[in-house]
Image 1 (tube, one colour):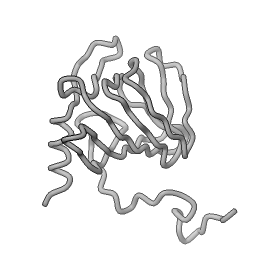
Image 2 (cartoon, one colour):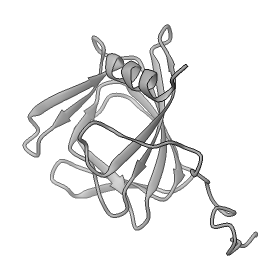
Image 3 (cartoon, helix red, strand yellow):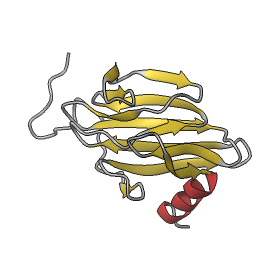
Length: 153
């Protein structure tokens, strides 16, 4: 087993120094970077970085979502705030649209690769307040705009 080199803190993990991170609107504790959009196939790929010991707002995935944990632990919480699942680095999941939840990182920041497949009338995520009221929606048009902004020609 290799040891992490003191001169290279990324020798034993994913090096994200060349990724340009962007805020995801006003959502706290998360940054993201668009990777690709397949308009014909209705697929959106991005990588997200969650702040250590934090979670993002309550939301629901309206589309099939594949994830791969690149670094850290990906924590999922039910709407009451109780921890319901911990996905360690290297975990891959393929999930149909689901119930409202919070998600975030464990003791260290967490990076997760997302591949969102399809949408419901252009909608991919419902963002909610703590009482499960929908306050905003993210969809294909939002991700297309983010991709255009982040990947200038």
